[in-house]
Image 1: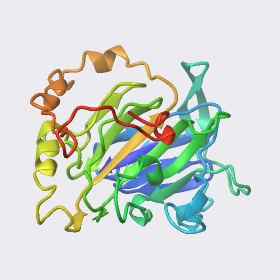
Image 2: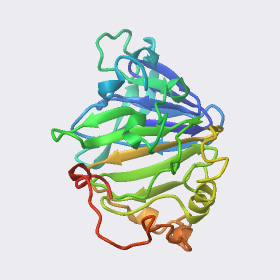
Image 3: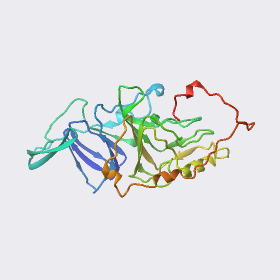
Image 4: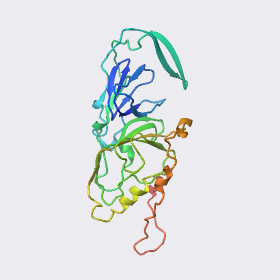
Amino acid sequence: MVLVSSPELLITTECGKMLVPPGEIVVIPQGFRFAVDLPDGPSRGYVSEIFGAHFQLPDLGPIGANGLASARDFLSPTAWYEQAHRPGYVIVQKYGGELFTATQDFSPFNVVAWHGNYVPYKYDLSKFCPFNTVLFDHADPSVNTVLTAPTDKPGVALLDFVIFPPRWLVAENTFRPPYYHRNCMSEFMGLIYGVYEAKADGFLPGGASLHSCMTPHGPDTKTYEATISKLGGPEANTPTRLSGTLAFMFESALIPRVCRWALESPSRDLDYYQCWIGLKSHFSHGKDGSDGPATTSSDDKDGEK
């Protein structure tokens, strides 16, 4: 999967060409020959590669037939072929985790027609129909899944592709940003444009964060305090709209290994942890001020913490 941030890409495949502007994704199945051209100069984006499963639309469950990403909005290329003598054409092939090259004297894009559903495709993220809370609580981010590559274990995926698009926030008496949590999935977050709702400063378009399995995380101190200050006041239940933003998440049941290039990059944020410095407890006791024992529902025992 390729997620384009800026500017557009021209991707040529054996099934045809796709022009992919910022805010769109393209999925190229395993084994396809493809070439990427940059018609407007250097481009920026994110790439995810998976093995062992194919992306599919998530099961909508109680949502029903409509919402999230619709099959009709995924576009496949029109057949196009190139029949030309191309001496010295280099093919780069990944096999067994290694890269190999081969040279030929013709274009690999000499396929004149195709049929079937094993085909490259693209999707415009602005066509995503998000669902959200309309009364209380912050919805689990899985409700924003565009595509999923499932595993044989229910509830966890090889990779979920989740987005956080412009949308209305209308929850009542609720901490609206993402809550503090840890879970069994590893979360790789990225920002296409705008500002991410849970991190007021320091998270720029083109940047990324990684919170691996069972690593606690949540909004930064600035976002937390600004939200808490509104609770109980006249603005607590006022609908607000998140606009001019598009963030995404690659969420996986696997634990990613960070390469040395990333660890030694001058762009690495060594002070990232300081975004939580200064967090204060806002817990309050019961109305009578006692510290007595409390009971809880058995349904809460296995949830996120």
